[in-house]
Length: 531
Image (cartoon, rainbow, N blue to C red; front, side, top):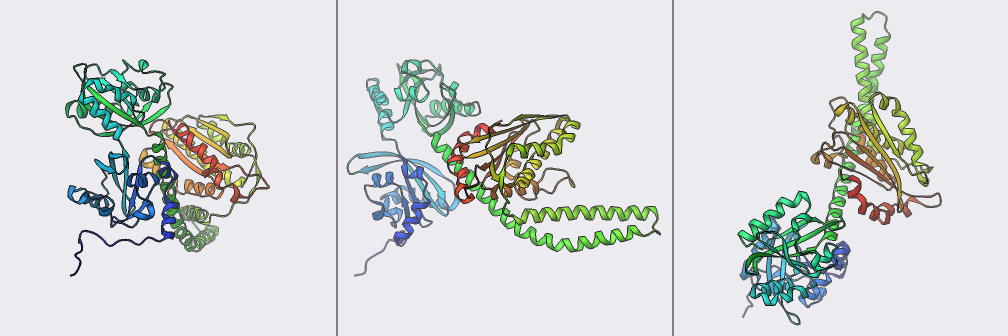
């Protein structure tokens, strides 16, 4: 008798120890340490990775479950229709969120909030244990006498708001501490919307009034809020309609997710940098070939134009035309030279230099134009800034380009301006910040500002290679170049290079910006570029 096979199940994936180690190396440390369970499936929904929290949830080791299809890992999802939804996520990339109850052999039934999203070509699932939250809600909905359970929960911050006054009438200690208050009594009577960031306040109000009170939806929303001391706090919030004291009220549960948000922003930044580096490398190869092909005919055009101009039998009209040909050929030659500079990516010729001195020399080149265009320079240079190993002329090229762009932007916007330049030592990096009060950069253009050949200048005023070349120079120094701006509020460009001494090689210090120094940079990056 032949054994019947389930056509809905795909072939079991064979996972080798080498493959498993590879997946572990790609999983972030935050996922490893997270209290949420993380599962990674391939495009056929075979499990390829699970973090320690996921092992505990399944009550099985990673070696035991990796390679199994999701139908075997999570029994019953075919019947509920969730299997088809997971396939849809892989196909369309559209994420979805759902609640589920999963039996645990030791802990009993666990209430989970499942967030499914496309990860590469496969599927990622984050399962958050909301059992305590659900028990608190059920206890609250059951009777007011069970409110005690709400205060005993240490997992989430919880408060109850009156539907009419929108004031907090009940809260637990976790909620009070999340926002920097010493006791629950300090929270009673406050309007939670006062702590929501202005940009999220309208959305938060809609979630409370419309989704929770009117429709009784249990949606999960992420909001940016502010603690009592003014520090930023990202929270994940869900609410449900209830009664308190015989009046309509809302029970709101919230969890701090600031670190998760920072990790997501950092991941997005790194992905953008990798994409940009790939584009620059590809365009660099093309640019080098085009420049070499154009140089010879351009040299011939310039030479014959000079020969023609030297003839005595030319009338003034012809001579003027020849001079125009020569000037335009020279301009084309400068563009090809820029292409070659962009493509070469020479290893910098480093020596101990003072970044402050490079800045002062760079400003000297612009002093006359700055004065002529009513540009005020405000310097805040760290007099104790240590010297570092860098290429003086390449760093000057970077600074001159940024200064020139700021000058042009401010002059065209309002025929004057202020450029603030600051240097400081942050960890093991030297950070130079340029902040102007020009027209700013739109969000769309900000994402492309370092792309080769991208420019907002008029035809003939720029090739779009300046910042791309600067980006490459800073990268060759083991550093970072990034920008931040908001329309009509100016722009900020930040140059970070590692602090390297004569007896240290760049291979030892390149990690400074991405490692220890980079962490300092990340923690302050929003403060630097927020306008």
